[in-house]
Amino acid sequence: MNLQPSDINGYYCPDDPMKRLSVNDQEAKLISSLVNQMFVLEIGTGLGVSTRALAEKAKTVVSVDPDPWCHENVWPVLAKDLHNVVFLKQIPNNGRFDAIFIDGDHSYEAVVSDIENSRRVAVPGCVYIFHDSRIPDVKKAIREQFKEWVDCSTAAGIGVAWHETV
Ligand SMILES: C[S@@+](CC[C@H](N)C(=O)[O-])C[C@H]1O[C@@H](n2cnc3c(N)ncnc32)[C@H](O)[C@@H]1O
Image 1: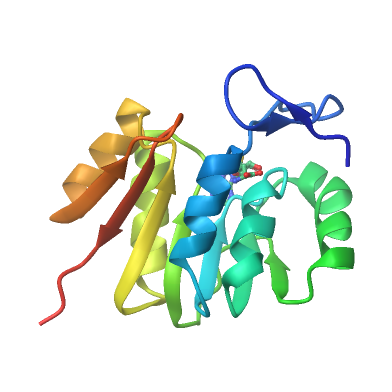
Image 2: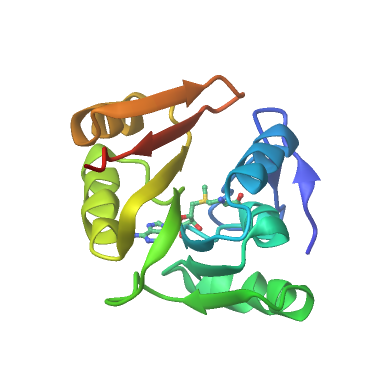
């Protein structure tokens, strides 16, 4: 896949009709280091840059994206190299994920819905990792949904949140 460094953040693909942006190199290293040996759900395969980073350390990654462009252009390329990744068009109904990486639709409503849907498949003590936590809608959703979270000041922001366990 033809990935080019973007002036804004991360990478883009000139052939991508959506002109989506990936995580950058620093963000990739950070998310990779957070998921060592974990069972990870990724919401938003996109260009697959974050998928590669997660797959490097995780035990297994389930990566979700509803966009047919990703299914045709990104999933087959990733599947050739990564043998611990499963691709799905929607969040599974079952599963017990240790970590959930959310980088899908960045509207407030969509982020809240991603959090609610992923809670159903999260283990107690699951860590939630958000890309683009600098986007006001993303930040608002995280603030409202989690009592505990930290904001890592990367270019786009990586939010790390968790639910207190008793
Ligand atoms: C910014 S891109 C993700 C970039 C990716 N993290 C990377 O580093 O290459 C956002 C992706 O989220 C996908 N998306 C949008 N709504 C979604 C949803 N409800 N569930 C899963 N993915 C979604 C889009 O199709 C798009 O591919």
